[in-house]
Length: 83
Length: 310
Image (cartoon, rainbow over all chains, first blue to last red; front, side):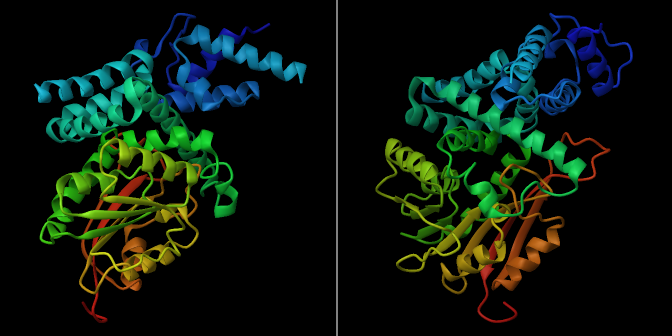
């Protein structure tokens, strides 16, 4: 079974167009040169589409690292299942 | 001493954004490096006002508003690239969830405020305003400015801070915005020179004509921008100056009129009775080459014509 982090890594590879990319839970925007505000939103839109969820602007703005993104995605998925 | 304190506000804001929202700090830092003198002059003034208006939590309020606004703009632009048109074309569709929503407008208000100095293309539009519009006003004593769609009021406030004999009548349709802007002008002691009125910019009629008029980043928010320009023309005497800014192929939640080319704005201004004295169009530095649309800000210095020619 593919983990959330593995799926996220595939999205990162696609968005940043870098086949060698390997994000970890600790990866932050400072670790990726091209990760600016426009790429951040593009990344979030791709995550939303992959997982069929929708983030708020506050959620998108508050993320500090990939670990928080993973937790946010999994939290939304739990909410979706409960609904 | 004062200069040092103000300088610290700018640096504090950049540090705060870098610490809390690093993804959003890079482009502002580049803008600061490329336009250091103008950036600091404008940022210091505006951050000083914001601290007076908002109190000690001003950095948090400004940063939260800015990142929320940038997220909304970037999401809208990405979706616009895919859709090929703005999400909404009806004012009724956006009114309830934007201008009539205090939650939305509280963040939006300060987000737009910060873009005035934080976005390089907005900083350059402001420079155009300072160089090509305000000198006309400085030749008039005790003048009155009509500001249609004032938003945070920043364009009036900057005018008032540089032209001490002028007054401004500031109009906005949002009750949240007018309340915030009224509080702002009181906080920074401009309330004896600035009158903030909740009204529709298309239908608002001042008691008497102003000496000059402005409408900054309003045209793209209405279904009939030509009506705003026509009302702007009625607000000033023949020969009077107006300053107008708008956005072209730049999506936001509440942008409903899609200008695609600069000539569309110029022709609309001429049809409303103006002669275009100067115009300036500028895009953000960081736009992907693959983008179909180039988001731009455009500014016009206009003179109300006396006849068909001039």
